[in-house]
Image (cartoon, rainbow, N blue to C red; front, side, top):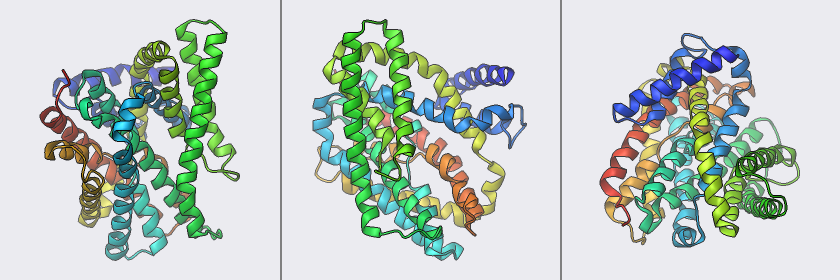
Length: 394
């Protein structure tokens, strides 16, 4: 396993640098590397790493979400509050529904199967979006109108909505007695519990760090450990109360920055350094999960469904941003920033197959295809539109 990690980090750094020099997002090089030398490619990597891939990806995602929380402030969130909430609900519901209807018609699958497919495809990827938004926040692009913070907040809600609705369809297939109204109520409840747990955790961290004087590096490790434990609560409490744990992680960082700005900035700087390692692991392992040989099985119909879903999502973004002060160019940027798929599709794509869903292989194929199409195109479009349409704050 040690040799495999050495290969991942050494080639990952090279791939990142190569794509950066080509003026492409560096993480795309790492993602491609995972596909090339992962289990569906040259198979150079020890299977032990792949067995713990889900946990490693979650830790990497926690690191970037903590960074996101530590980069948000109250005034910015007040500025983008209503549009961010709309972005968290409207685009994902419209896209998921559109994909569900199109897949049912084109592939001849049941409504439940099409629903699972729709809301796997509909989720955006915080792993792709968050690092770019943090970069724009650091260089002051779009910050005068809070655009990066709005995308950050909306994307975290987007995933909660998509995963909750997907779980409802999966429950229907498994024969569980699923009440539609109660499932709809679970979405705001999971958001509220996630925010509440995040606030409590952030306040606890501030109290402990003031009481026990330890080095900032140790504080970083303690915060990371607590955040990992927080995400484990979601599974522990799933039969009792829904909890959007990843949203809670981001709120934890926000509370620390709000209550102790100096510490928040110190911790953010340290998580930025840890992200150098975490980014390589996250995108390599996402790439390694992609069985690109499946992608061709969906054919042109699969491509049409994905692009049709993105078109409807774009409409949802415009509806969400109606009556905001954003220019047409800034709205175009938001549409591009809200298109990449990767992490949720890699995590959930194989679940229908393991549940014995007849269309399980098709759903997995479509999840793979959505990553291959939207991760590179969405990221490149986000880069280009950000440079062109976002203004740098003086």
